[in-house]
Amino acid sequence: MIDTATTSAPASTPRRVLVWDAPVRVFHWLLAASFIGAWLTAESERWMLVHITLGYTVGGLVAFRVLWGLLGTRHARFGDFVRGPRAVVGYLKSLFGAGTAEQPVGHNPAGAWAILGLLGGSALIVASGWATYSELGGDWLGELHEGAASAVLALVFVHVAGVIVSSRLHHQNLVRSMVDGRKRGRPEDGIRHAWRSLAALMVVAVLGFWSWQWTQVPAPGSLAAQWQSDRHGRGHDGGHDDDD
Ligand code: HEM
Image (cartoon, rainbow, N blue to C red; front, side, top):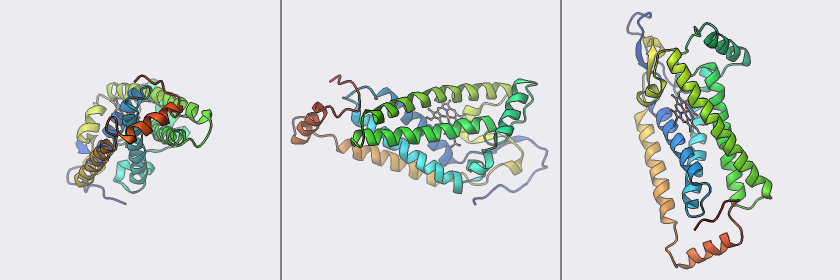
């Protein structure tokens, strides 16, 4: 278990305290960028290596987040924000009824389930995409891959809408919080360490992986390029259009 902050001011003093450690923030923006990038490159044979690279990046990020949800700082841990259906219904009722729902310092109970859906759905997209590309099953795997991607995209819209609604109702900019890590709270609600070195390591690992993938692009006219185009010519394209 990783630390929480010590109290140095009266418990009733609300101010902006550190809630999201740096690995959570780096994870979030890399996940959002990789998901959107993978979506935009999904239909094009020309961009397939980028699509696959971003897909693996999503897979690595989700694996990291599961571990960090068990071992990470206070508000990053699943135990801090995942609540049962009763808490979710209670939160939504008071939010849309009287507009008085108490805003937890970490994720709210409704947002938490969207987050679990985004993590689980992303894992399913990556697994089914890898299985499709490796030709491990029939057409159904490609359909599962595309269906899961559409479902997660829909969930992303719900997620972003939820962030906007919650930010307005609670007069707190949650997007800014996901950038600087700070939210309104009492000093004892905050975390003490931002874990910036770990976040820097994540960025280096992702950039290193992307550069290494880049070196795998076969030079035009090489035997490897010929092999790859023959492979795609045999219909190994996971259901994507060939627009080259
Ligand atoms: C580009 C538009 C997006 C914005 C503005 C945005 C904003 C946010 C914000 C503000 C939070 C924190 C919510 C809270 O305070 O409880 C959050 C959490 C989260 N978002 Fe997004 N998001 C975006 C896109 C995405 C995408 C595309 C994905 C995944 C495919 C995603 C996955 C997540 C996850 C998994 C969390 C939980 C973070 C954690 O605890 O590790 N978001 N998002």
